[in-house]
Length: 334
Image (cartoon, rainbow, N blue to C red; front, side, top):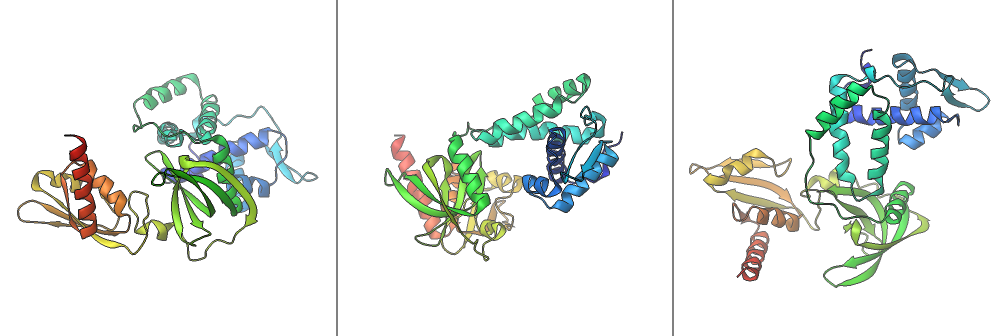
């Protein structure tokens, strides 16, 4: 059997659709006769998308889907049906292998165990030789990084539910600079993950400004029951535009100019620092990297990571903060 045409495309599209297919398979097998509207709500898509997925299951995968008019929902006429492993192409299978390892991004959250369970359920449907090939390839891909900080399951659950419901929350939040826990009344908008660490983007009721909260520092979370209307001017794309490495600062974005000496010019060439950067190559072989951002604290962190291979030319406040941080490090290591 050929891979379904509907599920060809980018890896992200294909993975999201296969996750939906697996979810639909579970629900239709459960005998509860869910409606297209209910399935759409569970998957976070439109009912039109669910109807397309059901058609793909029925036409391309041979699923015995039937509609129960009295219950106004869908189910399997043959509960013994299983999604055939042959429906996955070699490219599809490898993408799933990599995606299974990418679940490491969710370690520390209750979602990691749920995603692992879904993958194990899917793998159980594959023939033995396909599973062995999967396991061999999966071991050849490793997502490294420091161990993630654990997030309390209750905090994760309440936070994600509040974001979905657009519900104001009260946080008991640890502020390191004050060494104290403070109450924060906020409107939660979205979650950001960076280096397997999770941050909440929320608008504070006190200042009406958007701020970042490190989720493991939330000591307690209470849902208020009060709904809020999202700011129509807010968009994730605009929020990230002048950030850096998923972080966001306050104030207007400044022009950042970083210099890479000739022996370190490859650092600027090997990977971008900003989607809107420009590179200027000098005759001596050095490279100037320019972009705009307001997340100076995060740029400082990245510059220090390279231990002197990157020099800040502008702005002056970033150059000064990097120098002061370097001096503190030098004093601490005398």
